[in-house]
Length: 497
Image (cartoon, rainbow, N blue to C red):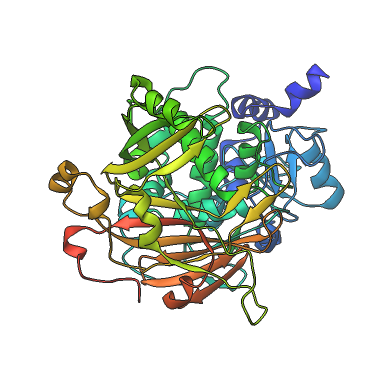
C-alpha cells in the first residue's frame, strides 16, 4: 500500500530521473510536449472547477487531476493510479493537475506545453492585476461565456444546491462592496497572514477569495458560479450551524460570517481588518435598569434613587444596525382584507436619535435603552428585524419599509461632537436583500447596483434580471448595504433613480 501511494505521488524531479534512465533525449521530450496530438479532444463545455477538488474514486485531496475530456477528477498519474487507469480504459488522454496547473498526456506521461490551454488555467485560477481591479467599476462591458451566454462580471447567479439561498444573497451582497471585493481579488493581500497551527478558520478567507475571483472573472466558461467549496468551508467552520441542506437566516449568517472573516484575517477588538475598515461604526448606548412592574409605587420610587438604577453610558462598535419594525395589525380591515402596513425608513431610524427609549426584557431584569451614533462607516449595513421568535413558532412582520434609493442623510442620528467631525453623512443604496414567503420556508433574492452601468439587477439563485429602481422599494427588505457618498459625488445620482 505504501509503495502504491509513493508511486502515485511521483514528483516531477523523480520523473526526470526515470526519463533519464529510459534514455529519452530532451529534444524528443520537448517536441512531444509542444505537439500533443490529443488537444482537439478537450471538451471545455464539461469543465467545472467549482466543486471540491476530490478524486471521484478514492475521495482523496492529494495529487488530483482533472480529465479535460469528461471533466471528472482522478488521483495520481503514475502506473496503476486512477487517472492512468481512466486514460487507458476510456482513451481520455489530456489531464490537468489542479494544484500545479500543469497539463499532462496519459498514459504516455509527458507534460503538455501549449499556450492554447491558458484559458482553462485562468478559469481554474483567475488572477487580477491592480490595473484590472481599478477599472472594474468604470465600465459595464458585457462578456460572452464559452456556452454563448452574455454576462456582466460580478452580476452572476449563484447555484442553489438545496437550501442555501440565504447564504448566496449575503455572498452576492458582499461581492458588490468594492473595497472588500478589491481586497479579496488580490491573493497577495491575505496570503502572508499567520494563523496558529491547526486553525481551520483561514479556510473561510481562502474560499471567499476564490469565490470573489470566480464571480468577477471576465473569461468564465459559463455565466453562473457554484458556491460549493465556499459553503463547505462555512459548514465546517461554523460547526454545522449553517448548512447547505437546511434554510437558515440571512442576518444570522451575515453576522457570523463578518465576525469569522475578521478573526481569520488576524483582526481583534483593537487590531482592524478589511471587514472593520469597511463596515465598523460606533455608537453610545444609554441603559437604565427598571424596577419590577409588580412592586408598589413607594418601593419603585425608593429603588429608582439607588445607584444601580441610574442611567449608564457605554461606547460600543457595530458592524450592522438592527432596525425594529412597528407591530403589524392583527385584524382585517372592513373589506375583509389584511392591511399591509408601510413605514418610512426615517421612522425606524429614530431608534438611533439619542432620545427614543426602548424597553429590553431579560429573564430577571428589565432595561430602558437609547442609542446614538458616534461614527459612521464607509459602508453601512441595515438589518430590518422581520422575524420574532416565541416559544411556539417564528412570526414574520410583512411591513413594507419606504426608503429612497439615494441621498439618505444620517447626520441627525450622530452626537453633536460627531456631527462636527464627520464630513459626509449621506448614503446611497448598493444592495438590498429580500425575503419572500413564510418565515420557516420562504426564499431570498437580492437587488444589486452595478457601479459601472449604474443599473440595478435582481438575482435569485441562477436567474439574473434587470429591475427598475422604483420596484426595489416595494419589496420586503431584510438586509441593506448603503455606500457613503464621496465629496465629489454629492448631488450626482448614479443609480438610475
